[in-house]
Length: 335
Image 1 (tube, rainbow, N blue to C red):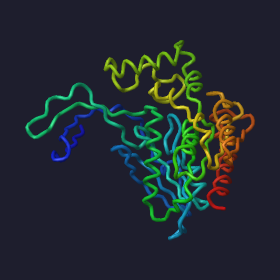
Image 2 (image 1 turned 90 degrees about the horizontal axis):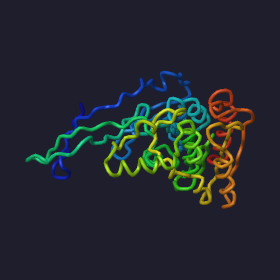
Image 3 (image 1 turned 30 degrees about the vertical axis):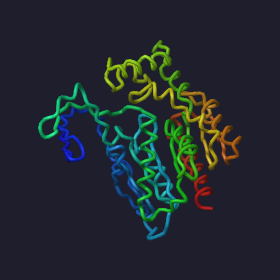
Image 4 (image 1 turned 180 degrees about the vertical axis):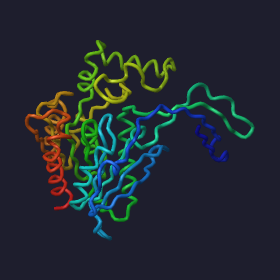
């Protein structure tokens, strides 16, 4: 049960009786990974469009009052910030402040609340009572890019950050966000995206290929039905990809093609891909984005790790990919 009261002078006061979609048990990043003494960690709350996001802020223990370059990190489709700790520690050990966070509705973050049913007439004190549902484990790329902007807003409030040296790192679906950020977020000075799913249509076709549906037509019809109030605004049923964790706002996913933004990129961008990428055509995603960024005059590089698949980049290729990213950030944000 959740109750929210607001000043009636500014807002109509609302009482929300909320039901929550059960979330998986969340183990904090620090419980899974023992941090070295050389790293200072602080749990932080980041507010995005009125919803609390959970973040982890890392910095070198001996940084004192030095102005540090900083890297914003976010997880991929179905992941959480707990999976980013090894990368974050590697970056912080080498002199960076690092902010890793969970998107709204994922991991330790709260989810947006959606009102279920009609809103009744306000009472004499301007109050209404409604039922609401928390949205969890839903992939909405437009919401996620807003969350990334709020993370950059948050880091600007830290006194030990050099705002002229801000980087962004993302993997998988957030690897696509690295391309988006390089093109659209003016505060980003340097970006790294690994196994970047930057062509959402190709990703959707691959992920839903066993469902025997026309994914574009299905997404269009779902958007129409949702807009007309014929179905709930929360993705459900076939909106869940058979081989991916979580549900998707498919119409928004299909609209999101950061590869098309790449011809506006002017900052350094590195994309690291798996040679045997199985979730999407890497040539039409990260490789194409780098080609377009280069054509615009950006310092951009495309590197492929031989023989590995998408998920191998978190396993046997972790050290290689992490070292590539660290070298890139050192060159772009320190030298």
